[in-house]
Amino acid sequence: MTRATSTLKTYNQDCSDCPIRHRAVCARCESDELEQLEQIKYYRSFEAGQTVVWAGDTMDFVASVVTGIATLSQTMEDGRRQMVGLLLPSDFIGRPGRSTSAYDVTAATDTVMCCFRKKPFEDMMLRTPHIGQRLLEMTLDELDAAREWMLLLGRKTAREKISSLLTIIARRDASLQLTMTDGSLSFDLPLTREAMSEYLGLTLETVSRQMSSLRKEGLIVTEGKRHITIPDFDRLLEETGDDSDGGFLM
Amino acid sequence: MTRATSTLKTYNQDCSDCPIRHRAVCARCESDELEQLEQIKYYRSFEAGQTVVWAGDTMDFVASVVTGIATLSQTMEDGRRQMVGLLLPSDFIGRPGRSTSAYDVTAATDTVMCCFRKKPFEDMMLRTPHIGQRLLEMTLDELDAAREWMLLLGRKTAREKISSLLTIIARRDASLQLTMTDGSLSFDLPLTREAMSEYLGLTLETVSRQMSSLRKEGLIVTEGKRHITIPDFDRLLEETGDDSDGGFLM
DNA sequence: CGGTATATTGAGAAGAGTCAATGCCTGTGG
DNA sequence: CCACAGGCATTGACTCTTCTCAATATACCG
Image 1: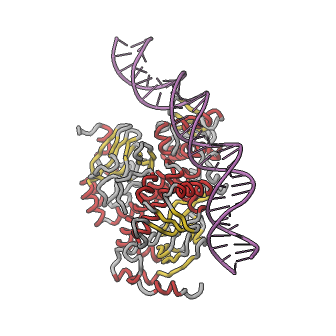
Image 2: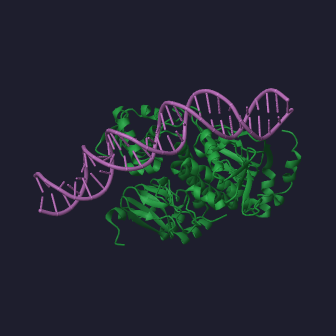
Image 3: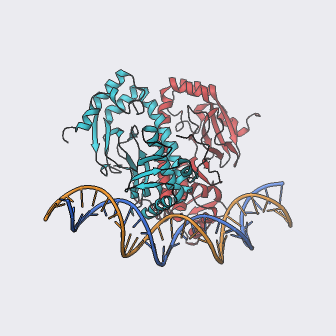
């Protein structure tokens, strides 16, 4: 692997500049602990579409997503695929104490990861409770997310599934940063139709049809293939099947 | 709450006699740590069908399932329900650091739980790494299980879903204890058809039809409503859609 | 022995899948 | 700078699985 690109260089300096410093597995670390982590960390970048590891392959590192989006998916013998996780910046990849990956890990967009060599990381976990504590917290959050996704996969209609996915991505983009003006939200879909279908347990065609149907009804506006605007977020929310008032609004 | 029943008494003595001693959240505890846990633990029993907590209710305890089976499920406004977890003996209920339950917790069979008052348990977690470590391990296992279930919910056919559920229950019963004679397995289904349908993301009628179909083809034999015999486990395994050789056989 | 829960079965409707054709961006090379 | 290729997305027609609604049947409880 060649020298880090300039994008990478930006991060390769110092944990204190890191955009995910306070949300990742290192969130609770003190500065001396961060120094130790810096000894065993290195950055890797992946292009959109590139596979990070295949299910069953040995993984000699664990990692945090710094920028970009990665996906976890499972494949059946006959090729049916189901995405089982969507990894956003600060999310953790790999399982301490296990040497192989249980899932295919793929970069959905261009992605930068902060990797730790597995053995040193595991050793450090033993003497640094802050890491294990934070990892427990993050794992519990992921478990909640997985369970919410189970409800979507098991019980929601195609239209509800699409609406749910769009609101989730919109919410995330809105909270993490950008783009709300008059009350409308607008963002770039980081997933292809195929990736969406793998996430939602649908076929690509059904995804496409439902997107068209939402577009025809004015619930979303599309621009090019991937840019989405949601003129009225609450109206889209009503299509998700979720408790409209219950959950927190962004 | 009245005095413990005779069944409860059996457990109420001593962690060292506990049937889940080496698998539950306390698995790694030393004897002095167990003594501390004994100070804050108490047993509760639930009858089949009884609700342990409703989603949204405050939960002032966390618990381990000692005997029996409990379920976690989510409900949509219009009544659609999806089970998101099946809790077997040694599984953990509740989330440290959260005061309300995210799910309905229901006893599927008569169940005994070893409960810990939440606040003392959380305090103890802070000074007892063994507990947090074990909980992390268990949570990662649950996350894996949830992700496997996502594949089932998103991609498997009704027949594959039923076969998968039956093999999972059969495997568990076989490993935990009993009943294999000539190569056939036999066990009591701990779930009603309705509970099965909630778990599998199907309707009750579809569950029933698929059970009948498996019965007609001789893949299972039923006796009464709930007792199942699997004459040829491998043959049933082929119906699950899973990698036949890959995974460990019981 | 009857009553109530639970489970089975049937017929028809509906949602999503399949197969196939067409359309639309993006980026590359002439 | 334009044209065209290749990947991605859309749309259509038809099929098939699963759901829905409704009627029985069967097991389990007192």
